[in-house]
Length: 136
Ligand code: SF4
Ligand code: SF4
Image (cartoon, rainbow, N blue to C red; front, side, top):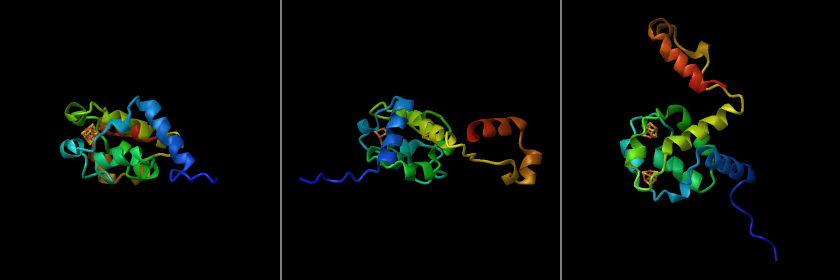
């Protein structure tokens, strides 16, 4: 009898497993209550809500999560961590997503993309933090 093909691409499944390994979090414990999305100060900057990001990972879909730049925009404020009824450390999951992106030698920001006005006015520590977080 022919086996039923898995809807999850093996590469995607590998990436989701790597995120679980790096973060130490089990996204399958998430009950999709949406509390993390409601309290997240960065949710309007992300490609979709934090709850949706976890939902994609539950289904083994990593590509949309990588493209939504969730790891880039999460401010690690931990508001969602203290509110999550299932005790999921969401920023740890998103940090693992960011690590996966950087491991592909992808820089998420380049100096040339920063407007000259911003370069002149922003504090140096902002650039240090930005390049630490967003370049490989
Ligand atoms: S830790 Fe990240 S995902 Fe959680 S509320 Fe803060 S910015 Fe949003
Ligand atoms: S608050 Fe926790 S349980 Fe609720 S959607 Fe977010 S991660 Fe899932």
